Length: 486
Image (cartoon, rainbow, N blue to C red; front, side):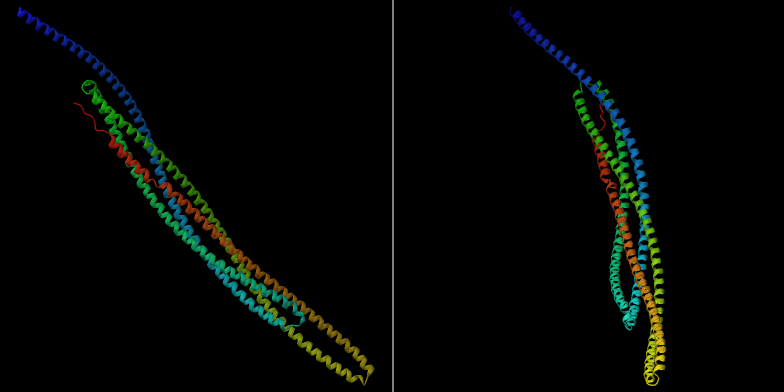
């Protein structure tokens, strides 16, 4: 009986253990079913994520090809820009040589103007000396030459005004020399600006080389990314085979891959933005180069206008020199005529004195003969009075003719003085014209310098190239190593 009880107890304990084992088996079965469902769901999610990732990679490859085409177009544009910059540099050298020739011509014109001023001063001194001689000779004349003395005083005032104008011309010559020095300084500044522009062009070439290197690195990074995609596809196949054991590791690795893919997309967007900014800068540089070409063409037109104006000034200078030579010859002829008229006046004075002596002698003879023969004396007196009246009338006519000749000479002298004043006015106008020419040359140089300074901004793209290099380095560092599973 005791054995039977012990067996019953053992049987009950065994049944209890069996029930507990069955319960544990049921729980384990349910856990296994739930884990299998979860693994199937995770596998489906992973397959869906892999499909989306594959689609994103294909779109990324298409965008990479488009970016490569854009890079090729940018390289073509950069080569065109280099050729245009070389042409612009040659044009700048040509403009510099032309400006040097224009400055040399202006220096020669200033020397010619100085020579003309010296000639005008010499002629004015001669005129003053001749005028003093004429004034000294006119002081010896009687009341008939009073008007001539007044007009000579007016001529003195005009000559003083001419000397004042000469001082003004000297001051304007100093201003012309100052403007010539300023033009020389502007030419030196332009040469320095052109040298800086060549330096900037060399730096741009270096940045273009760096940009090409960065493009090569980006292509290498894309090839590495494609190889990693292939490795990921193999890894996904292995992950499907080993889903139960490596589910959590796959999730972690996929999250890391998604993060790295997001970083790569951000870096690609930054690359696109930098490329668009570089394209805009290239367009801006092209526009600036077109503006500089237009400025060079306008400068060529201005140089041609300056040459034409200088030729006109040369013609005017030749005309003024010819007029001065004619004026000098006319003044010499006038001096000879004045000397001849002075001799004639002296001769007339001597004849008048002789006539006065003869009249006095005749009067004395007439008074002596009055006491002897009144009738005869009256007849003789009448005849002598008639002859005296004839002689006096002849003298008056001769004096009138001499006055007319002197008046004509005075008018000729006044006309010569007017011609002299006109030549001085022409010289003043010529100086103003040369000043205008120099001012136009200075404005042309300043505009050229302004165009060169506008070229300094768009050419400096080293910042963009450095940014591309940094982004390429960051992209290569962010790419994970290939995932290998055993």
